[in-house]
Amino acid sequence: MKIMKYKAKSMPEAIDRIKKDLGANAVILDSKEIKTGGILGFFKKRQVEVIAAIDETLSTREKSVKMERTSNSKTFHRGKVSVNEPGFITKDEHYKVLTEIKQVKEMLKANAFQSGQPFSADYALILNFLKNQEVDEQFSTEILQSILNKTSDQQQLTTKELLPLVQDEIVARLKKYSHIGVPVNTKIVQFIGPTGVGKTTTLAKVASNKVINDKKNIAFITMDTYRIAAIEQLKTYAKILNVPLEVVYSIEEYRDALNKLSHYDYIFVDTAGRNFRNDKYVKELKQMIEVENFKTETHLVLSLASRYKDIKEIYEQFKEVLIENVIFTKLDETTTYGAILNLCFDANINISYITDGQDVPNDIIVPDEQYIGQLMTSRYGYE
Image (tube, rainbow, N blue to C red; front, side, top):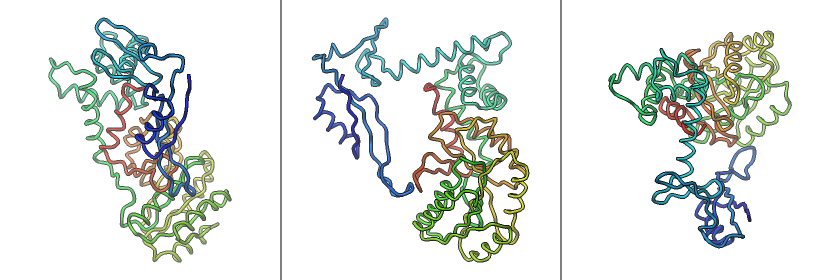
C-alpha cells in the first residue's frame, strides 16, 4: 500500500495531483481544511490536506474492493471512503446504523425500556443522544415531553423526524437570551476567567473584528501582570492593529487608564487568569473591575473542552463578579456541546461568542439560537 499526503489550495487541485501521482484507482483516506503561515494567527492561508493511497499489489478494481453482503445490498469500503453504486450501502450509512444499535444496547443495559418509561424506543434514542451530549437530564426530558405533548398519540415519529423537532424546541427555549456579541453602547469590554481558556486570544478576535469589520477605534488594557507572555502577546496584537495598550498594576492605575482612553469607541480589558478556587483572587478581581461612569460589560470565558461539572463550578465561583455574558472557547477541541445549553438555562445567562480555532480574527461566532439548535443536533449518528 502506497500512502501519500497532499496539500493544495483546493480539493480539485489535490485530486488532479493524486490522479497524476497515483493513478485513477487511488482512493482518498482522509481530507481536512488546514491553515498555514500567518503571524500570531493573522493572515493565515486556507488549504486542504488530503491523504490518498493506492494498493500497488492489486491491478483490478474488483480485487481492491472488500464487499460485505447483506440480503439485498452490498457495502464496499476503501480506507475511510465508501462508494455509492446501485444496491450498495455507503460506509456512512452503515456507521449510522451501527451507532443506533450501540445506543440501543446501552439503553438496554441501563433498563431504559422498563415498563413505566414515558418514551418509545425512538424517543429514548434521542434522549440517550442528548445524555451523551451531556445535556442535563431534566432539560432533555422536558424537550422530549414537549414534543410528545404536541403530537398525536397515534403518531409514531422516527429519530429522523424527531431531530428537527428537538432543534426547534431548543431554538424556542433560547429565544429569550441575547446573542449579539458586544452591544454598540458598551464602552469597556472586560474578559475574565480561569487560566488556559484562551482569554487573550479571544479578546484579540473580538477586538480585531471591531477594527477590521466595524471600523471602530479601540484600545487595550491588560491587568495580567502575572504572566509576561500574556503582556507580550497583547503587545503584538496591539502593534498589528495599531492600537494603544496600557499595562496596569492597581485599581488606581486602572481608573487612570480608563480616563486616558475614554475617547476610544471600545476599551478591551484582559484580566489575569489565576486559580479560580482562590476566593481572595476573585474578590480582588471584583474590586478591580467594578468601575463607575462607564458602560461596562464583563464576559466570562470558559472552555467547551472542560466537563460541565467544572464549567458550572467556575461559573459559581466567578458569580460574585457581575457577569453579563459567557464566551465558550475551543469548540474545535470537542464534539460534546451540552454545556452551552446547561449553563444558559441553569444560570439564565447570555452566550455572546463561541470560538472554534486559533485563527485571529476569523475563528469566532456570534451564536444565535438557530446556530446553537443546529449545533446541538449535528452530532447525531456520529458519536
